[in-house]
Length: 157
Image 1 (cartoon, rainbow, N blue to C red):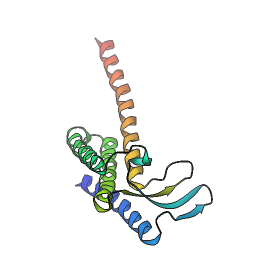
Image 2 (image 1 turned 90 degrees about the vertical axis):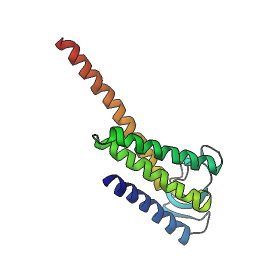
Image 3 (image 1 turned 180 degrees about the horizontal axis):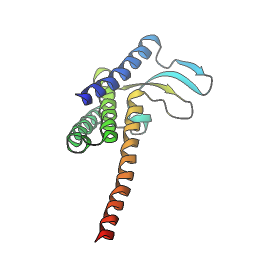
Image 4 (image 1 turned 120 degrees about the vertical axis):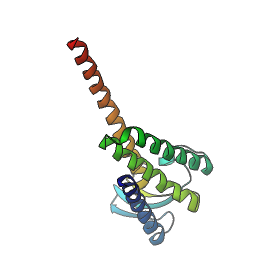
């Protein structure tokens, strides 16, 4: 139940922000929050996060659904006992669903967070990136912990 609530909070935050931007701004409009550092800039991105990969909308929908399915399967297997992994899967699934909703609804993703030195992105993209970062941290430290445990077992023998 906590997983579903967490995913819904990510989706809600993402979708409310996108609806606000798309209903109060014109496509291409940019509002400086901190001039030349951070702007709210409304664009629609048919490509991947940060516009890096240029595949069809169907490819992104299928990829998103696969990521969600894998996330749920892995969650059931490994994330129950680890809060960091559990939280990372909430962010990954919520972010994937947030962008999938846009792809189904308008055929592209609404982006608006514009730091001027980085491609424009949204809250779902942020959730995905934080979720991946947390998983990397988990697996780096888990590897070290596993190595320490195996070294301790060798010393004891």
